[in-house]
Amino acid sequence: MNNNVQVPFLPRISPSKKYTLVLDLDETLVHYYEEKNTVLLRPYASQFLQLMAQFYEVVIFTAGTKDYADWALAHLQNQAAHLYIDHRLYRDHTIQCMEVFIKDLSNLGRDLDKTIIVDNITENFLLQPDNGISIKSWFDDPDDTALADLAPLL
Image (cartoon, rainbow, N blue to C red; front, side):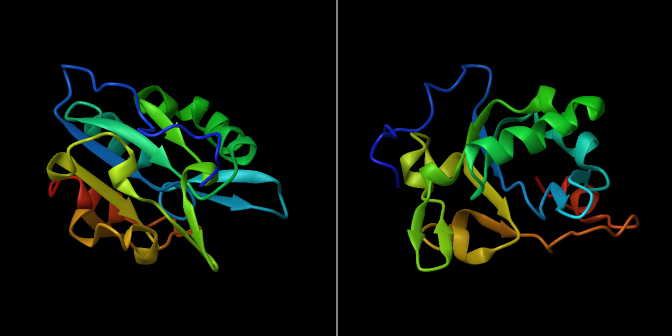
């Protein structure tokens, strides 16, 4: 974790939101194609974000750098998905342990009993495994339904 990062990471939660949903970015919501320098949005991601924003404070927590993640999320503007994101956290907010970037939810400043993380890498939430939902990695399958399947559970 970067020494310039203040704990808790997030400001006080809005009274209109009781729960926090933390979402990974790469291979959970989007996939970056280096060859084409473009970002693909996972099927149902926009609808998923819109629906989740009705019930949760939505936080994007990525192991990516701020510059990359903001650039990738800017590609969501055409999809309006960015409108449903309350906060963004980046690599500076993680704890690097060898090749794993651990997302310590206890640093968010949220009640862990009301916080869920969805990530395609289970090691990323190993400090709070009971808060995590593992989702299969997505690269470009246009028939993927993982987010649509997950929505009713949440």
